Each structure stands twice: as structure tokens, then as C-alpha cells.
Image 1 (cartoon, rainbow, N blue to C red):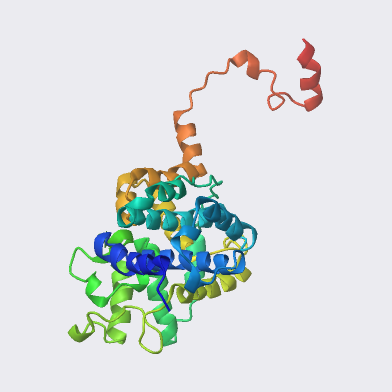
Image 2 (cartoon, rainbow, N blue to C red):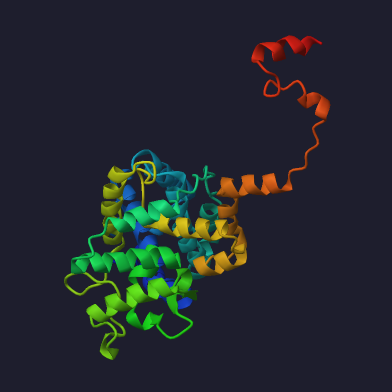
Length: 341
């Protein structure tokens, strides 16, 4: 069977171009791959074009727009997911401009498809009491419980993304002062996050118990399952959700119905902000490229806004106006009677 031009270029794009020329992370490559798996499924189910017959000339601007509508209508995806899929497609067609310049007009038509505006949800985060309540549900009398406590506490204290957490190796942790953990973030960007003494004590005890301080375990996953393999993102989310569900029964007001590992990251950022830590430092801890990304926490913190307003408040209301306040009069009736005077 003859290989189609789509198969040839998509294979090179995913296996050579993204990793070799763009230096994309494995997570980015997987996300782009998933976008094209959906596109191929759409072409088969809606356009009646099988993968082995799919060619580049089938992927017109109109077809891509139909695909983006399909994932929202049929797959019930939101605007954010739709835009992620479009980003993968845009990247592929940018690549095609240089690989097949003779058809650059059609590629640029696809590249002209705009991202869809969407309403950003409010940041979901836990109070310090909520974090403590979740961690208090962990049974530390068993080995798995001690692992989970060390893992969730480190995720919160470092503000790590779930993928960053499961990629940590014992060699990433330094137990000499100043205590730090190295995290590999998006775009293979490494950052250093300081660790507090309490976290170091907990983490060191966990590593000693599992012999992870021995040199030949340097490249072993820091947190692993019963087969010695590193945990998955869904696995870590499941662990957190299990303890959150138990904590919600203890105090429903502290634990929201929907919770994920990213909520711990949001919580750490908000707690640092409320403690007066500069946004620049929070940006560096979280691994944000731009301070504008971090500013979303300042906009979301209503408590800090209220305290800032109260601190800056200047009393400008004349005393004569306040004399008519019902709080100053002996009764609401007397105050009402005095309004027309």
C-alpha cells in the first residue's frame, strides 16, 4: 500500500520536527498526537475517509472548521480544548509551509482560523485549613500512606504541576542547606524551588524507608507504584480525590466538590500571595514564563483586595449625613420620621 503525503508528513512532524527542531517535551508531543487521533477519527466518521486514504488536500480550511465544531458538539469539549486542538493543527501547518511551499496558500488559509474566546473560570483553591484536613485523612501507619503524605505535601509545598511531580527523581532533591527540589517544567525548562525544613524531614524519612538515598537509585522515580514504576497523572489525581472525598465528609465547607492536583498548585500560589510574597517570586516558584500569568492570582484574591481597600480608605463622609443613620438613632421609626426634615 502506498504511503500518503499526510501520513509521511505527520510522522515526520511528530517524531522528528517537534522533538528534534522544536525541542518539544514528551507531554506536548503526546497532546499533539491526541489532537490528530481525533482529527483522523473525525475524517473517518464524518467525511468517510479512512486513515490509509487520508491526504493533505482533504484537510482544507472548511474541513478543519467542521472538525473543531465536531469536537465541541459531539465530544462535548469546551472552548479551551477546542483551542488546544487548533494549536496542534496550526503547528503542523506551519511546518507544512516549509515542507510543501508550493501549496502555501492553502496552509495559510488553515492558519487563519482564529482561536475561540472563552470565559475563564474562577480559580479553585483550598484554604490552609482545607489542605491540612485533606492531609490529615492519610493513614501513615501503612507504607502507601506515608508515600502519599510525602507526595501530596511536596506537591503543595513546591507548587508543582502533577507531571512535574511524577517526573521527580531522588537526584532532584538536595538535602544540604539550602534545601531545594529541581522541577522540569513546560518546554523542558528546569527551575529550582526551595523546601522548608518540615518538608525536608518528611521527604527524607520517606526516602530512607524506601532506600532512595542510595546512589544507584538516583534516577529511579521518587514516587512509584507497587511495580516500581512512576505514577501516572490520573493515578495521582485519584489518590488526591480519595482523601478529598473523605475530608469532605468531615467538613463539607472546606472541600469543594471538584478537586484536582492543579487545585493544590493554585492553593500554594494564593497562600503565598496572602502571606505577602512578591508576585515575581511566585512566578519563579510556579515556573510561569510571564508575570501576567501569575497576576491572575492577585485578581482572584478578594480578601487581599478588601484589605487593601480598607487600608487605603479615607473617611470623606460629612458628619451631618451620618446623623441620619438609623444606627445612630434610638429606633428605626424615629430615623424614618426624620428623613423629611
